[in-house]
Image (cartoon, rainbow, N blue to C red; front, side):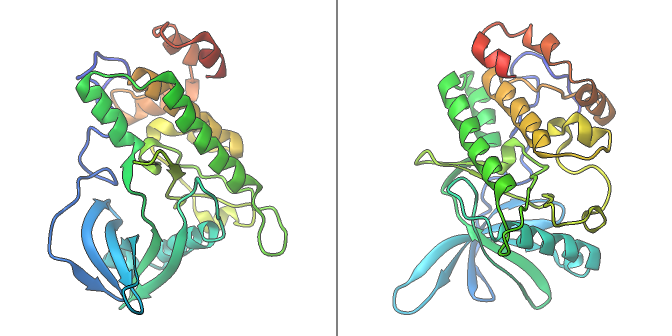
Length: 286
């Protein structure tokens, strides 16, 4: 994505302006059977997986609507990727919290791995921000603070969660970004996609090297390749709060390299000075 971080509204690509990824519009088509799940429609896709709205049926008239995240077949044959996907399932499945998307099952059908998870009837924050930008409307401060507060609850819970033996997991999401924050039409806020999360019980070697997460929402520690803790997730969440309030990208540069440099330098004060509409109390948090 090539754009400056503070151009006039309608020029700067905001989260959700793109049509790819989890924010893609549903793809209509004939329902298809995948194991015990009936895939109703594709609601997202990426370079490595597809996401479907699905239904599973049981005895009598029982049925449950959920989401199936299915790895593309080519990646299902890659042992290292399968290991990473398995790690996501192992890390996320024990987490039971109102602000975290629940994982129901991890399995494979004819060699194609998938996750079955909670369906959230709503939109991700990326699409909400893009829609607000398109309509020329701002996100109210109290709404932005509510969303961020609910995400904080999820991150606190994940970091303080314990395994079945009582050992602290200290889970760090490492990809806190608008597309991974789901907002239901009932006002619930849930964090999704712990695909690059890391627990204290997972070694660095198991997770692999390289940058994890979307460039514009990384922390300086991630950019510099240093060890990260829960404060890295909070830094990413601070970026999201700024962008909710301003509908401007905080660190996005004209190139990926410039974006990384902007994150590394983290000159937040300079950017806050351009937005006096942000309440002082909120600016102090940022």
